[in-house]
Length: 399
Image 1: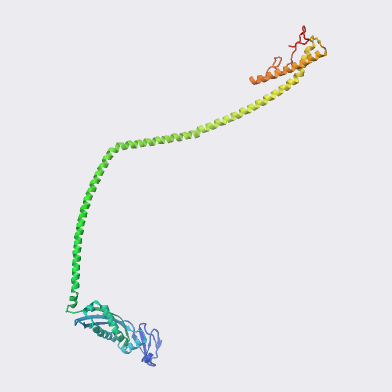
Image 2 (image 1 turned 90 degrees about the vertical axis):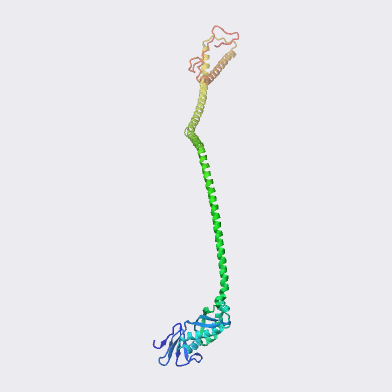
């Protein structure tokens, strides 16, 4: 915009004309922002705030009267506060290069004054102390012109052709040379000792290597001899181990085959025999029970049949007496005795038949023949009375 001015970040804008600045300064200071400036009525100038450098090369005489050529570099700039900017602007705004020239002259004067109060040894060994003293003495004077010093570096100190500094360093150089020679000698001695140690180590290594080789060769020879001697024995041992392994394998196979035969043949045969035995025992028990039942049934049937035929037997016996010449001596009592005898005779015959049947069933299992010998079991008892004789006791004889 026309009339609006903005300073750079490392610049201060000085506006003159119009009202005065801070502290009665002939201009106003603007930094960090822009300002509207009326053309013709106001005048704007810019003062640099960037870092500047000044180099000083000065011949200074020490307290000992020895001339030293000193070279130093000063880094400075205008202060950031308004007072420093106003002071620097009033002095260097028209020719800002004069700041470096004036700064060099100021530090040259202070450098000569401070070096004149020190010895060469102090200056050479305490350069930082020299720079600090120069900065302290020049700080107030530099502030008056609006400048601040960031650093002072003394780059070189030279005594020219006098040789004082070289003479001062000669003892140190000699000591250093002696130390260097001693170090070199020690290094040489250490090298020689190391070579000797290496030679001894190499000799020892060669000796040990020869011993090891000899021992190895002897061990190889002994091993070969043992191998040559142990060859047939090892082969025999190996064959014996093979035979033992084969024998063990055959025994295991035979045992396994035996177990297989037991499982496949013996066990099934034993199971089948046990089954047959159990079936036979069960069948025999069944037949025994059936035989006992049949025998019991037959005896009951026979007893029933005999009992049923007992009256017939008595009847037949009585019929046989019908045609016989029987004399009854004692009347009714004698006749009763005859009837009782017939019945008793029939019971005796019945018991005899039953015992015979039981005896034959126990011996050959065949039924006995009946009383008349025809084997039918249903024959009648035949009584033969004696017609021509009788006993003295008056009883009938029965055959």
